[in-house]
Image 1: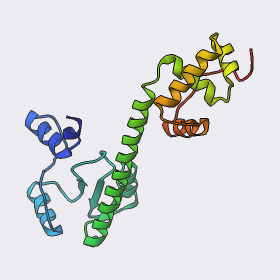
Image 2 (image 1 turned 90 degrees about the vertical axis):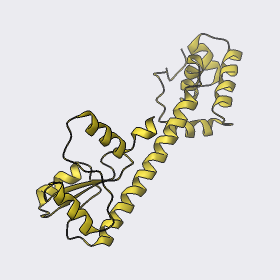
Image 3 (image 1 turned 180 degrees about the vertical axis):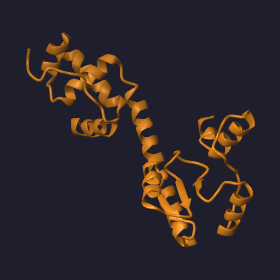
Image 4 (image 1 turned 30 degrees about the horizontal axis):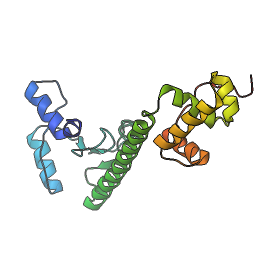
Length: 195
């Protein structure tokens, strides 16, 4: 469902069918600049056009095309998340290059989101006690110190520590720290010295 609704075509069509207020839009496919101009003119969209690719993060694959690229409109477009701001007279190759750049950036962002989700799911397998032990391990605490801080036996700390390493599929504290940094793990406030 989420992937289906990631399509701007689907969500715009659903909004149009439901009568939801939207900016003036058309859903069309064009192969040439002249076709784009004809479609926009026929739909009464005016001289400034916003193009969005059908998939991807809203704003990350957006292009503002204008008949007059004054500084203020360029600044507004870029602050609004445009990949590029091109004049309508821009060469087709310049427009295609901007589209390719935006799609590549969107692909990287999608991959990063998937990696963050996978890491979050991995860390979500940890029990609350395992997270506490992980917090202490990431702060460089020894098993004996962790046991004292948490009021549990040192052998229990070793069991939780082993469970953390197994669940996160790492073999060393260095690998655990690297994985936690990729996850942007924020350890809870843990005492830095012995009690």
